Length: 262
Image (cartoon, rainbow, N blue to C red; front, side, top):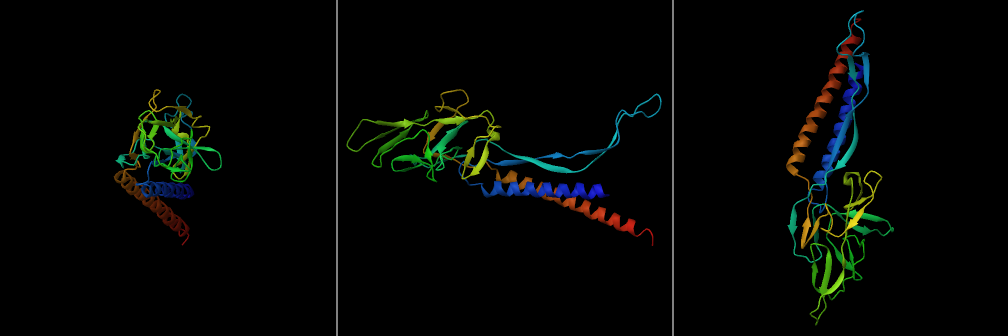
């Protein structure tokens, strides 16, 4: 019965973590560029009471064994990089990536990070994120620039007052990864490289296989499905409740065993 208590307790702990992950997904249902995460679990070690294939008699073996599991544990939370719904804003510096890839930005610490949130601004003529991180490679757009145009392939151009010729401001590049699920979340819609994700491969939008294109005047929303998350929440609640009932049943069995001497 000790096994049942510990196994049920591990199940309750796992479902609590599952609910924590669901809560974070729901909290970011309207966060630009947010990617939902899924909690992953695995079973723990098994106590082998009888090994499958062990000798049953001098001439036969057991077809199956007797193993008692010892519960579960959370192993990871993996980001799901399906595309979110696109919202038309008509703001010239709002950019969505249609397809795979990330914008590369330079943090104030000097390190590089990657994001799908394309709500950009200009500070001191530099193209930056909503938090002031500079887009890499740097792109300079004067404060009096007009008719800012960002092509599907990332070319940025504008027209100055009293002029008709377009001026090229720079080229937006996007980064792709061999395993984007291995990226580490920093918060603020930012990801960083890990050994699991592999190094960033930079390229022009639409310029290489698997590299997405840009859409000016649009933003990518969160890919969280509120309906699916509520279903996951109900399943997690019921699993938590079932494990708690196992704890209660095991406790009652202990109580009855302790009363046998009476």
